Image (cartoon, rainbow, N blue to C red; front, side, top):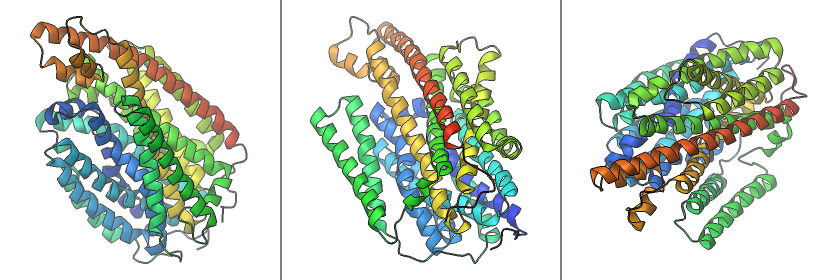
Length: 506
């Protein structure tokens, strides 16, 4: 296909795939405000809650590369429609899960469907938009759905929990898919160029097992639920699986993941931006959602409304990034947005949410805008550096950065928060040792234990938990701000040689 060819239906195609992507990205964050309600309803432990939230992006991170490769082999349309069907079924399964383990299993199925959707969306956009300028605008609009969808998740979840049971945050996907699936079926091209080769599912399993083992080792080690020797053994096993995966890719004539893509600095920069920016956004949102409800006593809907500035700003960040990148250059836009975002996160770390005034909403808006621009910049860098036939593979790499960033962000924020919380909380002196140990694991556990105590003891324990959470919040957001600032500096150097009209990587 020549660079001058323009698909006459390309904007309709863009609308269709953006609609397909919307439920997937909302599901990444819709549980954030549902954590307190879900914890109390299912009696879920802190570890189970982290897995309920985390298993979705974590599994997607492992599945995106193989699903992106599969889409390049048999076509984006077939894989995308199959993913939409699986996602719909899994949403109903999740909505009516009677226990935490069943909900975790449903989230696994959701991840399978989502992993088939994400790389296909980016692959379709790459094929439909050959012009560099139009592609930047298209990816900016796609970035709007990604950023705004992730940001609006807490608001949607809060609104549903105001009137329905916790399962409604999943059941809402079913009617959405009734609109999305027909749109994709009719608008997406029936015929498309594919790449020859086998689909090596064994390589995918190595990647998935390796990722899950490493993240599980982090969770188990921080929670103190396993001996150190066991944690180290799990981490060593995960590292070995990842080493075998990389070795397979380097030695295979038909690797699942084309590691040569990493030789391009712009692609490396794009993946790092996707990884860190999504991790920061997910972690900040989850932390704020819990503080607003557990510490300030807001309802899920009130918490969602409080975070509205993030959502509104993130919604316009995608198109703004496309326009600014075409005008001022990707390097400058990406670097400045990340540095400004870091400053805003640092401000939120020390802000008083009891009296937010105008500065806290403004800082929330800046965080949403700048991280949204950073995420769209990562798409422009990656998709502008590959030929159309490798759009699925490149899209899966970018999607892996998003999902792995979300999973690691939730894991690291959760682990760090639990560690600081347990070290900071000043338990009431008359509380038994066993109950004190459980109450100090997380603020959710604090509330669960408080129910078992007398009114006076419970109130004292909850107040101690609130004070500890505030202290952990300050430390956590300060560290997150420093990480995003380092990312901004790194991106400045990695994108030094990037040119929007350079020849794509073959």
